[in-house]
Length: 219
Image (tube, rainbow, N blue to C red):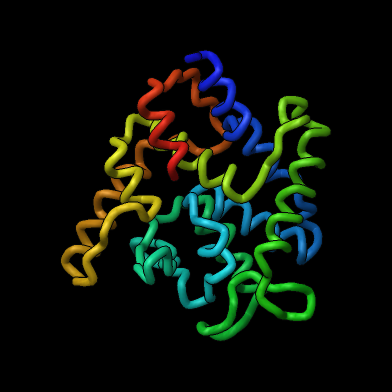
Protein backbone atom coordinates (compact mmCIF):
# COMPACT_ATOMS: atom_id res chain seq x y z
CA UNK A 1 0.00 0.00 0.00
CA UNK A 2 2.81 2.40 0.92
CA UNK A 3 4.55 1.83 -2.41
CA UNK A 4 1.27 2.51 -4.21
CA UNK A 5 0.89 5.87 -2.42
CA UNK A 6 4.40 6.92 -3.36
CA UNK A 7 3.86 5.80 -6.96
CA UNK A 8 0.78 8.02 -7.18
CA UNK A 9 2.65 11.01 -5.78
CA UNK A 10 5.56 10.51 -8.15
CA UNK A 11 3.09 10.48 -11.01
CA UNK A 12 1.37 13.71 -9.94
CA UNK A 13 4.40 15.77 -8.96
CA UNK A 14 7.47 16.84 -10.86
CA UNK A 15 11.10 16.35 -9.87
CA UNK A 16 13.55 19.25 -9.97
CA UNK A 17 14.93 18.00 -13.31
CA UNK A 18 11.42 17.73 -14.75
CA UNK A 19 10.58 21.27 -13.64
CA UNK A 20 13.80 22.55 -15.21
CA UNK A 21 12.89 20.80 -18.47
CA UNK A 22 9.38 22.27 -18.38
CA UNK A 23 10.70 25.78 -17.75
CA UNK A 24 13.14 25.41 -20.65
CA UNK A 25 10.42 24.30 -23.08
CA UNK A 26 8.92 27.70 -24.06
CA UNK A 27 10.74 29.45 -26.92
CA UNK A 28 11.90 32.63 -25.20
CA UNK A 29 12.84 34.17 -28.54
CA UNK A 30 9.12 34.95 -28.91
CA UNK A 31 6.78 37.07 -26.81
CA UNK A 32 4.40 34.17 -26.24
CA UNK A 33 7.32 31.99 -25.17
CA UNK A 34 8.49 34.60 -22.67
CA UNK A 35 4.94 34.91 -21.34
CA UNK A 36 4.61 31.14 -20.94
CA UNK A 37 8.02 30.86 -19.27
CA UNK A 38 7.10 33.58 -16.77
CA UNK A 39 3.75 31.94 -16.03
CA UNK A 40 5.25 28.48 -15.56
CA UNK A 41 8.05 29.73 -13.32
CA UNK A 42 5.61 31.71 -11.19
CA UNK A 43 3.32 28.67 -10.87
CA UNK A 44 6.15 26.29 -9.99
CA UNK A 45 7.65 28.61 -7.39
CA UNK A 46 4.51 29.90 -5.68
CA UNK A 47 2.06 27.01 -6.00
CA UNK A 48 -0.80 29.36 -6.88
CA UNK A 49 -4.11 27.80 -7.85
CA UNK A 50 -5.10 27.98 -11.52
CA UNK A 51 -7.85 30.50 -10.72
CA UNK A 52 -5.33 32.61 -8.79
CA UNK A 53 -2.86 32.61 -11.68
CA UNK A 54 -5.45 33.67 -14.24
CA UNK A 55 -6.83 36.30 -11.87
CA UNK A 56 -3.51 38.11 -11.37
CA UNK A 57 -3.16 41.73 -12.43
CA UNK A 58 0.02 43.66 -13.10
CA UNK A 59 -0.49 45.48 -9.81
CA UNK A 60 -0.44 42.20 -7.90
CA UNK A 61 3.31 41.87 -8.58
CA UNK A 62 5.77 43.68 -6.32
CA UNK A 63 9.39 43.39 -7.44
CA UNK A 64 11.07 45.81 -5.04
CA UNK A 65 12.31 45.06 -1.53
CA UNK A 66 10.35 42.12 -0.16
CA UNK A 67 9.31 41.03 -3.65
CA UNK A 68 6.04 39.13 -3.65
CA UNK A 69 2.86 38.31 -5.53
CA UNK A 70 -0.50 39.10 -3.98
CA UNK A 71 -3.47 36.99 -5.00
CA UNK A 72 -7.15 36.57 -4.23
CA UNK A 73 -7.74 33.01 -3.09
CA UNK A 74 -10.68 30.93 -1.97
CA UNK A 75 -13.23 32.61 0.24
CA UNK A 76 -12.17 36.01 -1.14
CA UNK A 77 -9.09 35.92 1.09
CA UNK A 78 -5.99 37.78 0.00
CA UNK A 79 -2.51 36.44 0.62
CA UNK A 80 1.03 37.34 -0.38
CA UNK A 81 3.73 34.90 -1.48
CA UNK A 82 7.43 35.85 -1.62
CA UNK A 83 9.34 35.53 -4.88
CA UNK A 84 12.84 34.19 -5.55
CA UNK A 85 15.46 36.28 -7.34
CA UNK A 86 15.05 34.06 -10.40
CA UNK A 87 11.30 34.67 -10.50
CA UNK A 88 11.76 38.40 -9.91
CA UNK A 89 14.22 38.67 -12.82
CA UNK A 90 11.88 36.79 -15.14
CA UNK A 91 8.82 38.81 -14.15
CA UNK A 92 10.72 42.06 -14.51
CA UNK A 93 11.46 41.21 -18.15
CA UNK A 94 7.85 40.16 -18.74
CA UNK A 95 6.37 43.27 -17.09
CA UNK A 96 8.57 45.51 -19.23
CA UNK A 97 7.32 43.73 -22.33
CA UNK A 98 3.72 43.57 -21.08
CA UNK A 99 3.72 47.35 -20.52
CA UNK A 100 0.21 47.70 -19.11
CA UNK A 101 -1.68 49.43 -16.32
CA UNK A 102 -1.71 48.00 -12.79
CA UNK A 103 -5.37 46.95 -13.10
CA UNK A 104 -4.81 44.98 -16.31
CA UNK A 105 -4.29 41.17 -16.42
CA UNK A 106 -0.73 39.96 -15.90
CA UNK A 107 -0.95 37.17 -18.47
CA UNK A 108 -2.82 37.85 -21.70
CA UNK A 109 -3.49 36.37 -25.13
CA UNK A 110 -2.03 37.71 -28.38
CA UNK A 111 -4.95 40.15 -28.60
CA UNK A 112 -4.58 41.36 -25.02
CA UNK A 113 -7.35 39.40 -23.33
CA UNK A 114 -6.89 37.68 -19.97
CA UNK A 115 -5.74 34.07 -20.34
CA UNK A 116 -8.54 31.66 -19.50
CA UNK A 117 -8.14 28.58 -17.32
CA UNK A 118 -8.50 26.39 -20.41
CA UNK A 119 -5.75 28.33 -22.18
CA UNK A 120 -3.36 27.89 -19.25
CA UNK A 121 -4.12 24.17 -19.04
CA UNK A 122 -3.40 23.81 -22.77
CA UNK A 123 -0.12 25.69 -22.62
CA UNK A 124 1.05 23.62 -19.65
CA UNK A 125 0.24 20.43 -21.56
CA UNK A 126 1.93 21.71 -24.72
CA UNK A 127 5.17 22.59 -22.97
CA UNK A 128 5.15 19.36 -20.95
CA UNK A 129 5.00 17.37 -24.19
CA UNK A 130 7.89 19.37 -25.61
CA UNK A 131 9.87 19.07 -22.37
CA UNK A 132 9.48 15.27 -22.49
CA UNK A 133 11.64 15.25 -25.63
CA UNK A 134 14.62 16.21 -23.46
CA UNK A 135 13.39 14.70 -20.19
CA UNK A 136 12.05 11.17 -20.80
CA UNK A 137 10.67 10.81 -17.25
CA UNK A 138 7.98 13.32 -18.22
CA UNK A 139 6.66 10.93 -20.86
CA UNK A 140 3.27 9.65 -19.82
CA UNK A 141 2.85 12.13 -16.97
CA UNK A 142 -0.36 14.13 -17.00
CA UNK A 143 1.10 17.55 -16.21
CA UNK A 144 -1.52 20.12 -15.22
CA UNK A 145 -1.50 23.45 -13.36
CA UNK A 146 -2.41 21.51 -10.21
CA UNK A 147 0.66 19.33 -10.77
CA UNK A 148 2.77 22.48 -10.51
CA UNK A 149 0.98 23.49 -7.30
CA UNK A 150 1.52 20.03 -5.86
CA UNK A 151 5.19 20.12 -6.89
CA UNK A 152 5.68 23.47 -5.15
CA UNK A 153 4.25 21.97 -1.96
CA UNK A 154 6.54 18.95 -2.24
CA UNK A 155 9.57 21.21 -2.72
CA UNK A 156 8.72 22.98 0.54
CA UNK A 157 8.13 19.66 2.28
CA UNK A 158 11.41 18.30 0.94
CA UNK A 159 13.19 21.35 2.37
CA UNK A 160 11.86 20.52 5.83
CA UNK A 161 9.18 23.20 5.98
CA UNK A 162 6.43 22.38 8.49
CA UNK A 163 3.08 21.37 7.04
CA UNK A 164 1.33 24.22 8.87
CA UNK A 165 3.55 26.68 7.00
CA UNK A 166 2.89 24.87 3.71
CA UNK A 167 -0.84 25.18 4.37
CA UNK A 168 -0.36 28.90 5.07
CA UNK A 169 1.74 29.26 1.91
CA UNK A 170 -0.93 27.65 -0.26
CA UNK A 171 -3.85 29.50 1.28
CA UNK A 172 -5.31 26.80 3.50
CA UNK A 173 -5.29 28.81 6.71
CA UNK A 174 -7.66 31.57 7.83
CA UNK A 175 -5.77 34.79 7.18
CA UNK A 176 -6.45 37.93 9.21
CA UNK A 177 -6.83 41.12 7.21
CA UNK A 178 -4.69 43.26 9.51
CA UNK A 179 -1.33 44.54 8.32
CA UNK A 180 0.61 43.21 11.37
CA UNK A 181 -0.59 39.70 10.64
CA UNK A 182 0.19 39.99 6.94
CA UNK A 183 3.71 41.14 7.81
CA UNK A 184 4.24 38.15 10.11
CA UNK A 185 2.76 35.90 7.44
CA UNK A 186 5.31 37.13 4.87
CA UNK A 187 8.20 36.68 7.31
CA UNK A 188 7.26 33.04 7.89
CA UNK A 189 6.97 32.45 4.15
CA UNK A 190 10.28 34.15 3.36
CA UNK A 191 11.99 31.89 5.89
CA UNK A 192 10.37 28.89 4.21
CA UNK A 193 11.44 30.10 0.76
CA UNK A 194 15.05 30.43 1.91
CA UNK A 195 15.10 26.70 2.59
CA UNK A 196 13.99 25.70 -0.90
CA UNK A 197 16.70 25.00 -3.45
CA UNK A 198 16.52 26.70 -6.87
CA UNK A 199 14.96 24.65 -9.63
CA UNK A 200 18.26 24.09 -11.42
CA UNK A 201 19.90 22.22 -8.52
CA UNK A 202 19.61 18.59 -7.56
CA UNK A 203 17.44 18.22 -4.45
CA UNK A 204 18.56 14.68 -3.59
CA UNK A 205 16.14 12.01 -2.52
CA UNK A 206 13.25 12.28 -0.12
CA UNK A 207 10.58 9.80 0.93
CA UNK A 208 7.70 11.46 2.71
CA UNK A 209 5.61 9.60 5.31
CA UNK A 210 2.13 8.51 4.27
CA UNK A 211 0.49 11.03 6.61
CA UNK A 212 2.24 13.90 4.84
CA UNK A 213 1.33 12.51 1.43
CA UNK A 214 -2.30 12.33 2.52
CA UNK A 215 -2.06 15.98 3.58
CA UNK A 216 -0.68 16.95 0.19
CA UNK A 217 -3.52 15.14 -1.54
CA UNK A 218 -5.89 17.66 -0.02
CA UNK A 219 -4.11 20.74 -1.33
